[in-house]
Each structure stands twice: as C-alpha cells, then as structure tokens.
Image 1 (tube, rainbow, N blue to C red):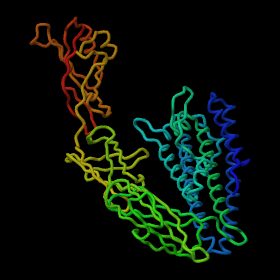
Image 2 (tube, one colour):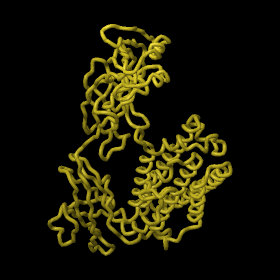
Image 3 (cartoon, one colour):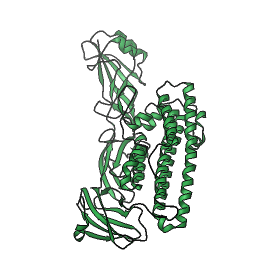
Image 4 (cartoon, rainbow, N blue to C red):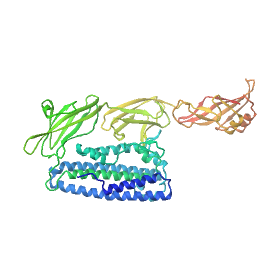
Length: 534
C-alpha cells in the first residue's frame, strides 16, 4: 500500500459527521429530527455497501490462501482474527443501539432491531438515553464499557500491524476515545459525555451507526494491509521483522505470562529459534551464549514466563532465522508486562453494612477481569447482577453477617469481603416546618397537619417509612396533668387534634408518642417527640 491519502469514502463519512455535529448544537425541531433521519439513513446505507466491499476483499484473500496455504496461511489467519474481532464489536454496538431504542421507546428488543428511526415516536427524548450511556452518582452507564470495548478492538487491530508500521496506522485509524472535548460552555468532557450526554435518541442512533462506519473503515484498512503483504503472482513476502504477540500484558501472580514471537510475513516452513534475556531492555546476537534458547515450530515460537512476583517485568530477545543461502539472520525485540496479585474490589455503594428487607447495591470489580468473567457468591442472602452492578437482597432475619466471594470464570479465587447485616435504624418523627429545637408556629403546623419520619442523617440510605398511627398529648401550663389525649390511626391529625393546636398559646408543648411506623420488615414503634408552639 503506497501513501495514506484520505479516500472519498472517508471524506464522505467525515462530512456526514460534521453535519451531525452541527445538528446537535441546534434546538430539536421537527426539521432537525428529519435531518437526523436523513443522515442516519445515509450512514446506514454506506455501512451496508462498505461491508459488502470488505467481504469481496476477504473472498480474494481466500482465493490466494487456497492456491498456496503454506505461504499465505499466516496472513490469512490474521485476517480471520480481524474478521472475528470486527464481527464481535459490530454485534456489540448493534446490541447497545437496539437496547437504547427499546428502553426509550418502550418496545421489545426484537421490535427495536427492525424499527426504522423515522417510525420511532420518542426520537427527541434525551433523558433515558443519557441515563443509559452516561454514569451518574447512583448508576453506571454502559458508555464506559463501550469505550473499553472500542479501545480493546483498536488495540487488537494495531497489534495485527508490523511494529514499524503501527505509528502510521495509529494516526490513520479512527475510534479514538482518549481525547479531551469541550461542551457548549467550554467545560472539558470525556468522549462518552461529549457524544451521549443530553443527546437525543435520534442523534444517539446516528452516532452509533457512525461508530460502526469507523469500525468498518478500520477493518478495511487492516485487511487491505494484510493483503498487500503478499504478491498475487509469486507470493514473495515483504521485509522481515520480529513480532511479539502476548496473550495479555497484565498477569496475575502465580499464573504464567504467555506470548507468541514470530517474524512478520515469515515462511511458515521454517522453525525459528528465539534467545531470551529476562530483565533486559535490549539484546544483541553477541549475548546468545548467556540467553535462554527456545525452538519454534511453523514460524512461531511460544514463550512462557512464570509470573512469580509482583511488579513490571521486561525481557529482550533475538529471533534467529535462516536466509535462502543458509546464513543466520537476527531480528531483535523487547517487551514488558505487569504481574499483579489476584484481587477483587467489593464495596457497598451506600454504607459499610447491608440492611435486611431492602435492596443493597454493591459494586464488584477485579483487576484485569471484565464483569462477564466473574463468578459472585454470597454466604447468606441473595446477590443478583443488574444493568448497573449487583444488588444484595433476601437477607434472613437470623443473619448478622454475610460474605461475598469473587472467583474468575476459570475458578481462580480473587477475593472475599465480610459485611455486617443489620435492620434499618429507627427513623425520626418530625412535623414539617419545625426547626431543629422542635419549635413551630400554629399556622405553619396546621398548614401541614400530619407526621412524617426520616432516617437519621448518619444513615446513607434511602427508605420511605410510613407513619401508621400516633398519640398527641397536650399537658397543662403547670405540668403534671393532661388537658387532652387524642389518637390518630393514620399519619394525619384528627379534627380534634387540629382544634387542640388552634387553642394553644405561645411556649405551650405538644407531645407525640406511641408513634408506629411500617418499615421493610414490618411495623415498629419509634421514639416520641416534643413540639413547642412559638
């Protein structure tokens, strides 16, 4: 491939995206919604044509592989990886697009897959899509996971490219999410907020299809590059270079670091030899005598290094290959990876305690592991995964503590955490409008003639306790005797209570006692309160 001039297709996609960005800055009107539909249909049509063109390249690639599998096999295998990675990310982006349509429009997932944007009734809604994509204080949006998936896909594509060509492709490929953006007020935003915060559904769908266009563009660039490294007539390969493909650069202590080391575009009929020096930044062929020797097979050397201690580990090496005359050629390389202890972070999102009878949200994560790779168990109660994390419920009355354990999907123990189990503390009864000392005017009390209750300030948890009944007592000015005692079977003052309040003078006291409320585990009685008339 010669040069990296922008193709007409890329220019068209960029132009459509500029139109989309301009539309986002305007007030949402019927005309603008129609414009989004037009832009989205154009991008959707381009994506379909683009996908067909890419498939044609795969067919040409397959023809060359069938003619000479030994020579083309290495590049063909990479092409299949590119195809699989792209299919996976494409399906994932589509699933998010259909899901945001489903929850916004209130239809089934299958209906969301086939509905046209023009037929969506709530295409100007932005509250539901924003909550779906963008994280808040109480909810984790899917946007962060989408960014991670796009970054992983982009990194995988770059790793397909020979190392000396990667900087060029890094500049060329789209899907960059690490830039800083500014909103209309000049405030800095992350990529996900810039694209999906307070953005209407019609724009979200269009942006998702624009992301798909960038994915197809990336796939096309990588496949074209792979295809260009073979000659259709005699299958001669381009210049040789060393290449290291680790399974992961993040390894748990006790596991093994694994990588494949090869010469890019090498003849698979050769068996290369690799010499490794651990804890080294570079290596030359003069150090072969002190290095570890590893023989390869079919053009690839599989390297395994023990991850026995924490920290950043590095190694350097040389691949030895024979040229057509039988002379040894050396290709140096270097790599580093991180070794970490297996660990899981388990933290309640409210307080350091679980309460019986209510939903207890809890955040669980493990270093180097996606949520789908975790297996979560709890010793007492029930833990369920939701769209925003996990929720602990059904804690038994006899339980005073419970343990959450985290394992990886392959059975490796990652961590556990013990939590106390309590019932929610008693709420505090109050009269709306009374100050901290319990003082209130008669007029203000009679404006809100009822009792409410709320949890103490030290409890970082929300639960709406309901007052079922209470008794009002009015003592005499001299104390010791009762003027009147009146009981209410609801949260509201009775008519007699209202009359009693009306008859009170300044500094006279009301006592509310025998206050019964309903909590998550049933009825309970809470402390009395005194109110002074101002």
